[in-house]
Structure formats: C-alpha cells, structure tokens
Image (tube, rainbow, N blue to C red; front, side, top):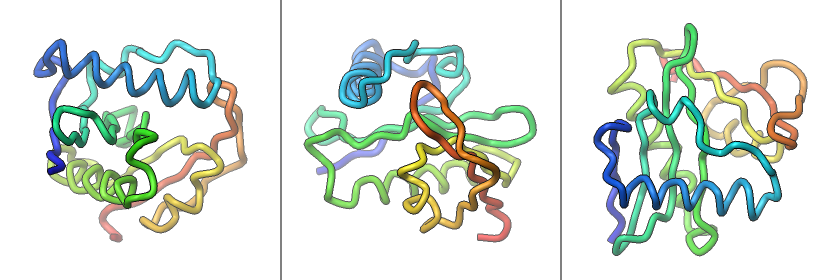
Amino acid sequence: MIQWHLKTYDELTKADLWAILSARISTFVVEQERPYQEADHLDHVALHLWAEDDGELLAYARMYKENDYISFGRVLTASQARGKGLGKALVEHILKNIKLHYDNPIVTINAQEDKELFYEKFGFKADGDVFIHHHTPHIKMTLDLNKK
C-alpha cells in the first residue's frame, strides 16, 4: 500500500535521505546521463515529498520558496513504478501541499522540455524559450493556484 510522506530537511531520517538521494542520482545522473551536482543547497530549505510502498521509494519531489514564487523540482517516478499514474498523483500531492504550506499562489518550475505537455494538464503555461539546464533542455512554466 502506497504511503505519502512530507518532511523538512531536519525531519528526514538518515534512511529517508539515503533513499531520496539514491533515487535522484539513479534517475537524473545515471539513467538520464546528466553529470551534475545532484544534492544542493535547496535540499536544506525544501519540503520533501515522496511515496513509498513497503519501504521502497516510488516517487519524489521537493518544494521550496524561491524569490517571489514557489517552485518544485527533482520530480521523479522510480523506473519500476512508471506507467501506473503515480506521476499524476505526485503532482496532485505537490500542488495540494503548496496550497497548504505556502502563502504565495504563484508556482514557477523549470520543467524538462519533454514534460511540458504533462505539466500543461495541471494548468501550467510555458513562459519563454527552451534553455539548457544541467545538460538537458528545459522550459520555464508557471501556474497561478488562485485561478485553479
């Protein structure tokens, strides 16, 4: 049975942190062949959201305030859990938790370009041109949760 967790950095256990970093490195550095510093300063200020089943991390994202907007990133579904609707459930949980934990309703993300249509299903709109971030084409996308 899938369980959802939401924790600050200080609330993460060593096992939580290891599972999160392991999944992120496996997905973004190894699978997507993107050599970059995966763990960064945002981990300390983010809310970490993940789904697990029987102790196995299946989906993950982090949410944080940046400048005058809220953002989220490192969105992943583990390879063994793909194709089962967990990505959609993850974004729904992200948006619900942003409404609960942040005052600002403006959400801005840097989405991988091939995920643009996925985020449009939640009401995100592309804002600007495609750019390269961590060796991968990305596009800035924005959603005003007041209008959702």
